[in-house]
Length: 242
Length: 58
Image (cartoon, rainbow over all chains, first blue to last red):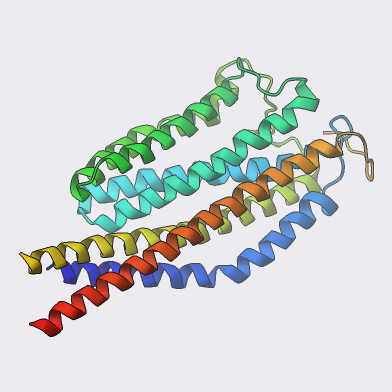
């Protein structure tokens, strides 16, 4: 029984690695295009100057982090419905990659803010604060997982945590509309307040970060499945020695 | 937003720092994955050998 589930995990892991492999060429093309878009295609913003070019990768990684946490939410729902550990591993991998992208958002933001707002970290700003809370939620999610050794219990707790934690994502998105903020509102209901070349550069950056996220997600899921396969093998070895 | 093509100013240092941080975080994460993958391959190899050895003994 242990060996059967172990080989099932390994097969799923191989499939994930194959998907990640097929994404490498699109990732390379999108990476080059995103750098071209941010540094050569997009014009220099008159008031902020060159530092505004951080915006393309900052927003790209923010979008990807939101998407990653949506996959954690979906993974949690699918796990609770189907009780298949694959969804739990997918959610865990997505949370980890999401934390990486949120870290990029939280570090590039202050680097942009220092010359523009004259402060590294505006504590009163709702978007900055809610994004920090988002990062803390998913770091807590990963810590929670590492403290629970039993796979089924860990998956159940993490699924519920991932579903509830996702509530902060729409709060981050809507915070600049709900509360007074100094954060720029770039995308509004009437469109983006940007030059067409800037919108194109932003779209390419978002696409590149999405492809990067998917590649990392598949690689990390494959690794987590291998880890689960190893755990099943340990059970098999123990069972035989008893 | 108002635009001005080809303007370079003193804020380039911040721009450089921003992109350096992005690449550093991504490279560190890839190194972490690489290390973890190597450990996992080793673990799987050892376990497969242990299982094969027990199978032969039976």
